[in-house]
Length: 613
Image 1 (spheres, rainbow, N blue to C red):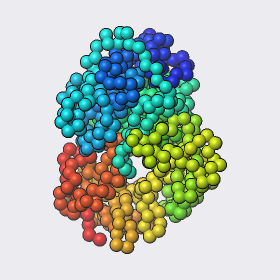
Image 2: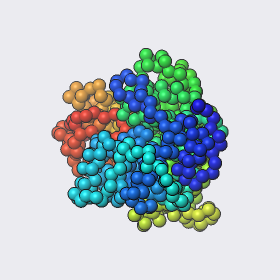
Image 3: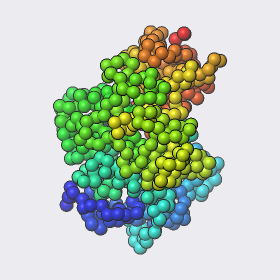
Image 4: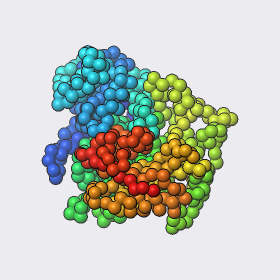
């Protein structure tokens, strides 16, 4: 039996307690399904765990982990996407240990990050699968300089069910650390956010309420990697708290054939899913008319877009492409969040029209969110990220720490039960980021605040995210948002690849200078391009729209713009490589090879080209 409507969730302290509750009350209902695509154009092989089976596997693996390490020890998850990742994560929590969600060795371009995070977290044990055992063992030995026995390896798929016998649950305090969520590293070195059991349960409940999943039965459908904060909360924590079915697929399966994601959305009533901005545009361009023919998307409840400033055009293009498949116009839900707040902070509610804001660009650079005509070529078009999900949000002056009024742009500050404890082994930075106070102390009755480092404003009661404080391009005393410059540059010429470019500032003799590094589309090579014409088009568009002269425009092959582990472009790493001469004029790209992560990448390195000024 598989009832679509689970009973109301109880008030449990931890995710393993929820697993146990559902195993006792609805044992035969489906909990997690992983869809594996073994061949091109495959419709997928489904592997399903019921709540009873999930509970058994979690208890067995928790017992095995208890033999390897003490409560409070860190356990790194180096599993491929799948049910073993889910059971490994929940088992670490059930054993009273601290999970460290990561990814198996071999993710292109991220071996240094993986080694660095392992060295920082210092796990006593590693959970992986039998297929990945040797690669994980080699990695662990490199991280500990050849020493053996420092990190004990447990293969989740080789632990027998019998290990669950006699397993006693560990009594874990709600305020204890459940896992370390390492930041993506888009603006700095990754840091491990200490997420408590209370934090993740609170944020799962907040997300369920925000997207209407607390009152109606839903299915969570996802391909986001489970080491990513949004993937972990939406595909694991929220369904565990709600007792809802979670349907998972591998990110590579989506990238190879994006219609697979849409088919899963259509196959499950009231589906909720999340994806970064590029994925929606990717579906528009990659899903063929023949593939669309058998799609039925009228049952989709919410599509979460949690990228950097969400632009209405993305939602419009996606809906236009799939409206005739029944996709509701009100399904798109721009949202805002960050790892330091577990993930979800603010969200537009499903069933409501998209919040559209046309803002005056010059006023925005001066710190004011003033309305402009949508058809004004100098207007910045942004989507509102709705209202906070069970949290308090304020806009603060990042220097004076004064609370700003509606319509003023400043740093987004957050307060709520989902805000993490701090950064692992970074006491000074934790105090600065997680324990901020307003200058007059009058707006913090519930304690201190999280400084997000993100810029935004409140208009008409909605949160609008405008960019990252550290990413601001400041030239001649004027602020420019890199996302805004990138949006202009990618529209300047058809060969500039959408969402595969970065703008940043570099030092110059007379102050900061602005640079754009952009990938070209896959359908052409650099040798076939008139690079000078592309550079002229980009320079001209940026100059006309922003009044900014670009000091350099570099065109690179697909896959050469640096990525974070979550698939976002990394301005910090691309800037560092630019300054190090990695994108050499007409020569080999010394940084070498494509960057891994979520977006599609080519498998060969290429050359970078720029035109003389």
